[in-house]
Image (cartoon, rainbow, N blue to C red; front, top):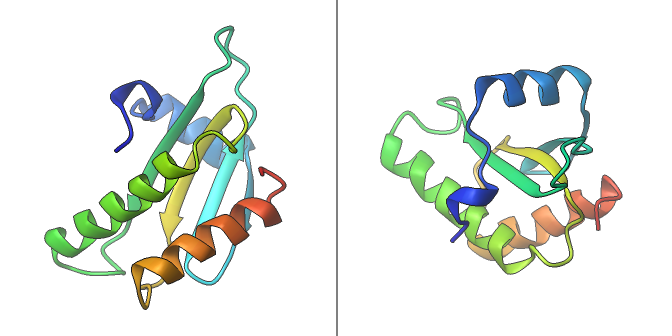
Length: 111
């Protein structure tokens, strides 16, 4: 599980990343990222799952937990910066989501 220290939660961060950041996408995911300009140079993440994926909050929360778990497993190989990871489509399985996130990070040259 990701600690609260590495979670993005300010609206200004979201706007800055969406406006000035670069993005990469894969089959299930879209990653928006920007290099962290802050002095502490920490890693920060946010996971977004829209209602287009599922109208049920329990399903959306399940996908968020799965993505956060995958990020927590791979946090050592991800460079410092700020990232918003959003789900584009329903994954077939957890393993498919795991492979897709790794592929998307490589495509964005973040790994």
